[in-house]
Image 1 (cartoon, helix red, strand yellow):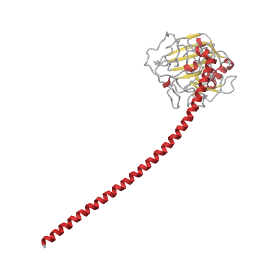
Image 2 (cartoon, one colour):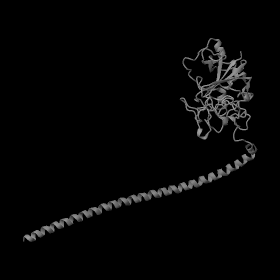
Image 3 (cartoon, one colour):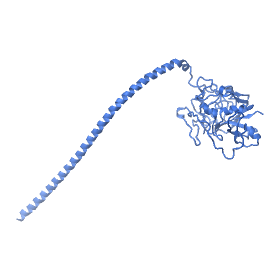
Image 4 (cartoon, one colour):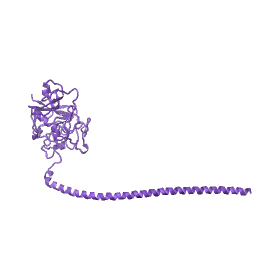
Length: 376
């Protein structure tokens, strides 16, 4: 009896184990079924997305075919227009040189030390200046004229306006700074920097370069009206310079500073511009100074900008030398060019602020001022 009871308990335990194993297997198979159902759902979703993308791809193929047809038609039209342009302008293009001739002058005066080559241009002091040095095209042209500037404290005279800076000096103003002038035929007063501390004073500064903060690659209207910051870099304006010279006989002084700190000068015994109808043609007298005469070859030339080509070159010197100037072909001076740091620079064209007789065409000056004063 005891043996039968023991055997019965063993059988019950075995049956329980088998039951638990069977239950575990049933649960596992149910989980697998759920996973399979989820996988089937994901496959169905992926299939639907694939069908949607396939439909979208067919639509894009149809649109691409239509655009390709348009492009092909335009290509045919462009080819026809190019052929017509070649027929009309072919002779001119055949004789169009790739760039202006480079300055071949060997300067008598060279800066004492020639720094390393640099391509750094037009550092901005608080205002963005467009640049494209990567393409070697220099700064982009701009058309804005002179902005209204708040005069700097301590060197601005509220008196005036005066005819010029000599008139201001004769009125008792012996300090250099910003003054209001109004040439006799001018329609409005102009702010200028008066240099009263050099060569007996009375000099009206018509151009100033010193840090590259102002872009000088501008259009005709901008050069006519003037632009920049009076206590920094600026261009007075061709019309203002013309009206200034109409008052009497003036002389011109160009002050150049190289990257060693040395200053040299070029002075011309007379200076005036002809009216806009004559392209503000430059008229100069005889030269004296220690910088060399690099402006004499520009005498009698009209002013050229990117949008108004008046130079003697087959192309446009303003395009290659990145400024506005009385270009010849293109000439020995480019004081409205690109402001490079360090002096010697690398560029495909001679587009720096150079004075060929001092430093050559690939030496860009650190600072430049152009001033006029009535002849004594």
